[in-house]
Length: 270
Image (cartoon, rainbow, N blue to C red):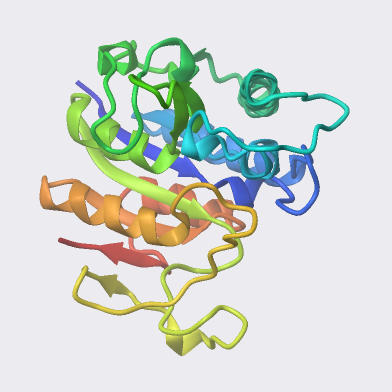
């Protein structure tokens, strides 16, 4: 069987995170070419993308990451309640996914889409759902994304992060050799905040014992930011998966990382 790679396109990479529902189409198109190149080199791909401005902004306002809460929310033009916001965020994620899949299809890449709210329950790394659906035929890219999913009990719903998805996919779907995080704006994990970092501040190999600093936009982000990526990457590495973080603004680097070549970025180990 052909090897597989799980790729995570960060939401901050493929969208303008400061403006509601604004995709970076040029970035998405460039990344789609790297997926095409993987397939052309006999490497199958499972693709997970983040939400960026398609999920985090509205989810933050409506506190969807907390589940059902009794609070006085300020309605907007599209949402009058948390239930409305759940439906709206799911629709927005499907819209972003449509941009992603359209770019792949323009490269002649067949896709099959698995929206998590249709098959997953629960949040965090221990979510429940049948991952066998991602064991698709060679040459087809299974695509999924961070989403608002059902949650048992009083919470009723919550946000399943794409970083939790990639950890499970990389360690449970057959023939996955590596996990590549394509992140926005930085070359990998850094020793200091990006605005102060120089080229020498890149951490080329990271384990959980090494301190790093990253920008987590807590006023926007409703998942774990770069820290969750690092943590889930280390968990995947502990199970024998090769894990890399690279600057997704350089599609060639993403491709090289997927192929297991030496590339500027951060190798995550356990």
